Structure formats: structure tokens, C-alpha cells
Length: 109
Image (cartoon, rainbow, N blue to C red; front, side, top):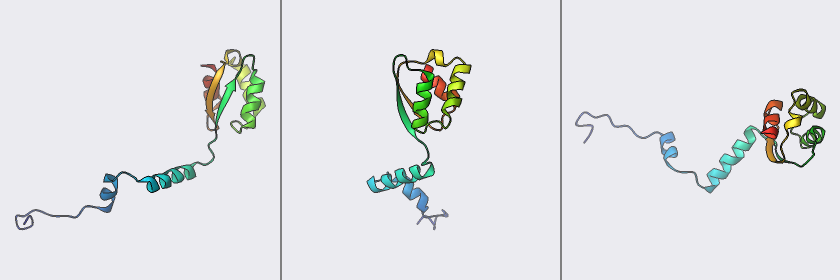
């Protein structure tokens, strides 16, 4: 009927059909697995900074948990830029893809 009136009729594309439906549990699990495959090297760690904890102790802890590669380098960074005097007590979530600056700002906010 539409064609007889001069309209062009097309079928919906496969991609359009899929985006309309929300992912089910199986599809969601598959998506999460694919996301973790993209960057499996990211490590997340919650560091607990206690009273009188030094930059050395923090650097050693971050190194042990594979957040940083060079404990001495991070300690030197903290000391050279006076971040070590501003370290706060508490729990902080850090990842191994954070820069020294991001780590320092997280620990001293």
C-alpha cells in the first residue's frame, strides 16, 4: 500500500534491532568479561593510612600491592614536593594506572 503511494519501504537494520533490547543476564556477563579483557592489567587497592604512617611505609605498601613499580621513587616524589607532610588518615582507593601526582593528591586531599 505504501509503495503504491510512492513511499520507499526498507527493513530495519540488524544493529537497530539489538540496541532496542536491554541486555539479558547472559549478555551482561559476556559484556563484563569483554570489558575486563580490554585492560586486565588494572589493579585496584584500598590503602588504609593510619596515624603516624610515613611516606616510606605507604610507598612500600603501594609497591607490594603492585600499584607502583618504584617505592623509592614515589617516596622521593612525596618528600620533594612536600606531600609527605600532608598525608591524611583514612582509606583511599588507588589504582596502578594513577600517576604519582594523582596518588599524592588522593592521599593528601
